[in-house]
Structure formats: structure tokens, C-alpha cells
Amino acid sequence: MNKQIQFTLNGARVGRDVPNHRLLLDLLRDEIGVTGTKEGCGTGDCGACTVFLNGKPVNSCLILSAELDGVDIVTIEGLKIGPELHPIQKAFIQDGGAQCGYCTPGMLMMSKALLDENLNPTEEEIRYALSGNLCRCTGYAKIIQAVQDAAAMLRK
Amino acid sequence: MKRTEPFDFYQPATLAEASRLLKDNGPGGRFLAGGTDLVIAMKEKGLLPKYIVDLKRLPGLNSIRVNGDGSLGIGALTTMYTIETSPVVKQKYPFLAQSAAEVGSIQIRNRATVGGNMANATPSADVAPSLIALNATAKIASAGGERTMPMEDFFRGPGQNAMDADEILTEITIPKTGPQLVGEYIKFSPRDMMDLAYIGVSVAYDFAGDKKCSGVRIVLGAVAPTPIRARNSEALLEGKILTEELAAQVGDEAARESKPISDVRSSADYRRAMVGVMTKRAILNAAVGPAKSWVDRRDRRY
Image (cartoon, rainbow over all chains, first blue to last red; front, side, top):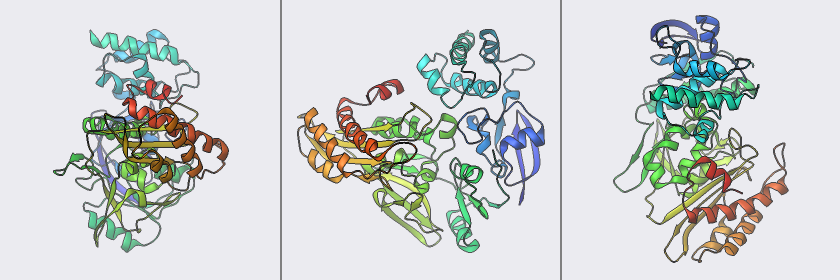
């Protein structure tokens, strides 16, 4: 009921013997100790656990460790560029795009997914991209502002 | 949130091997595709599979291709996000792309597969009405061979499909359609996103220059144990010139044909009334052309 898996996590090779049923989220947080990724609802509704799997944003609370052999995972810890914060992180700080901060890792990852494809998103497009990320502080206005400002920084 | 219990886990490399695993290991096994239904059922609803057979390593099942005869093959492991953003789907069947876009969030749609969604046979599954409206067929394989069946016959009840335990849905095929095909899917739900449908209505028909409708298909989701065709409503519109009054009559007929239940999400009476309204609007919207954005898609439901 265990499986030997190898994958990349934020650019580094990881090899583990994991129980088949261990969730990716728990593998990251409890076994590897990379705790930036958060658990909100646990059922794929809130987006707090968003990570990139093979370059695509997914809910890590719905992925079994046994599925991970050979994949590439990037978490919020892998967002910064060298020692520098990513422009999306800078924009969230500058604009107050985080209140309690619990949804923030997921919001940042999903914003990155959007801006990777579209550096000129409209407000409509930002709302669409972030529709699977809930902020219970309801700080959406500043989050949208932060994504727009991050887009402007990235366009330069 | 509860955690899942231990289970055996297989990642077969061929279809025959995957099918045999279910046959040889007996009851209690589940196929896994994207996991966005299965893992939730294990965490939230106490589902305890003895073993899981992950289909994601099977080759050749995760792409969309146009066949020589003009039909479109959608591999069962194609994700909802791939369907939503596929240039060929958007160009030929914009309402199918739109149906896929109604499922969950982008994170969910990056995992959820069309095959998994169909095999789960949820009555409210958003792409099912549109696939039935497009006369799609299911390609089903097992170690014993392959068979096809209309998607219309694929659903047998909530969570029940027409496949045996060791059979695997491998592809959904949409037969060739003409350039005059128009369609619309309306998901009617209280929230704009991240919600299940109170009702779903998919309408497809050929719309000629003289505004005559032919080859009409009207399919309703979430108002019966399976997605259903509203055949009397289709017949009312067939061969007729589209008017707002006729669309309203067809909608009324669709409401009569629906068999909704009352549950925590909505009453049967309300669902039936909304089938009438949304069928009318789906017919009229289809004639106008695809929605330009999600805001347009939302606003033109009302």
C-alpha cells in the first residue's frame, strides 16, 4: 500500500516511499515540511491548496501521492525568482492584496497561471481566473488591483 | 476534512491490462482519471475502494482530433480545460466548449476529464447534455474488445452508466456536422461559477438562411435521473421558422417533459418553470451566435 515515487519539487529532485492514499497537500506540508500551501475546504472549492502540476494549476487536496511519479510540482515556495520576490508577490504586498493571508498562496499561484498566458487581463478575465479561489476576508477588490499592477510590472 | 483510507494502487500501461485488473481483483475497485469526483467521494462521502486503477498512464486517450470523415474524437482523458480552450472545439462547437467551462474552477478543470465526468453519471454533469445534443457516441473498451453506444443511452441513473465493471470509456466521438449548426448550453444555478446546475439545457439545430430550424436536439440536465432528450419539444421546432413565440411554446413543452425532483437546491416546480424559460432562451441565443465572454454568457441567460 506504499509506492516509491520520484518527482521534482520547486526544481529539486525528490524521492519518497509514500502511502498510496497520502494526499499531495499532506505530503508537501506534513512529510516534506513545505507549508506555504494551505488547506481550506479539502474538496476543491476554495483554491487555498493550489499548486502547479506539470505547469498547470491544480488543487493539491484532491491528488493522491501515488499519482505523482515523474511529475513536476511547483508550490508558492517556488514562485520567487532567486532571492527576489516575484512581481505578483510584490504587487499583492504593495496593494494590500492580503488580509489574513490564508488564501494568498493560492491566489498568487492562480494569478501566476493567468499572467503566464495573458499579460493584459481585463477585470472580467481576472475574476474568471480566480473564481476557484475564495477569500473569506472578502478582499477581492484589492486582489484584482494587485493582479492588474503585477501585470503592468511584468509588461515592462 | 477527513483523510482517505489505504488501498492498493495500479497504473496499467495498456487498456487490456487495466480492464483485466478490474476483472481479476473483483468488486471494490475503482478506475481513477482526474480524481475530482473520486477523491472527494473518498474524503467526504466515506467511499472506501479496496483498490484503485489509475488510467492516466494509458497512451493516446488525452487528445482531441479531427478524423478523416469529419467526425471529432475526444479522448476520454481529455481535461475539461483542454476542451474549453481547444481551437477546434471552440470553432466547431462553441457551446460544447462553453459547457466544459461551466465545470468547477480552472484548477478542477485541469484535472477533471470528460471520460471521468461521463462515467460518474451525475445527472447535472454540464457537458452531457451538449454531447447528447451533438449525437455523440461513446467508445467503450475492455480486455474482451470494443463497442460503441450513443451517449444518449450511456446514462442509466444517478451514478449509473451502461458499462460493465471491467469496461473503460476511451473516446467520445462527435459525428460530422454541417456549417449551419448552432447551439447553446445554459447552466442555471444560483452562483455564476463554482456551482452545480439547478437545471442545464443544451440546444442544437441547423439554422438556415430562411431561419428554418432542422435536426433539432433539445437535451435537459439535472431534471431527471439522467440527462434526457425533450423529444416532443424537438418535434415542435423541427422544420419551423424560428420566432420568439414558437421558442416560448417549445420551452413550455420542455417543461412538461422534464421530471425534476425537489431537493435542498431547488423545488421541482421551480425547476420545471425554469426549464421552460431557459429552453426558450437557449433556442433564441443559439440563433444569435456564441457568447463573447463569460459575462455575456451569464447575462444572456436572463
